[in-house]
Image (cartoon, rainbow, N blue to C red; front, side):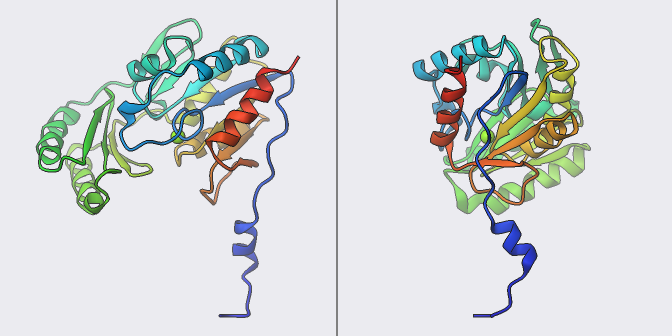
Length: 257
Ligand SMILES: [Mg+2]
């Protein structure tokens, strides 16, 4: 074993502190999967949850409605899981956004995504472990239940992206084909320009690679990011170990006077 210590990697390994308790004046932006809900093999298995629903309702009251869920899922899927309780939502990693007043803005779906969908459907039919998720301006190919297919999935999606002038979005055991358009950071910025968020300090919490855009946007606007889990490097200033720790932090905030 080498005796030399690289100070950069030592810093990268040093863990980040837990975030402070949520104070007055905060606008909260949170991811869903891997943050408010445990990661599962099949995203369709994430169901409404009575405890989470009560906690989010308390948080909405404490924050005077300054709560938005910013997820990679599609909008209808988020409404299914959150039981239509959260109006301010960003879906498909920022490509779709519903303001607190209920107005939905979505990046257009390029025709190339329809051609790509045909190819992806044929590919998925050959492997029962693979799962396709169509979110409108993005299509996700999940391979968590078929990790051996990772390379083939990556190759196919990259090839379709090149052919159709689309973008590739990497995730945790998932790769997506998406239209060009806003990311989670752009979604945060757009929310922060509108009521009830404008004028407050943004805090963005999440575990995804795409949440880094949210952490950066929150920092740019005077707030900070909180990363859930062990993924490093990160631009988040704080970390929580896992979903359980995140739920404890949310719960404490929701019970603040
Ligand atoms: Mg996540």
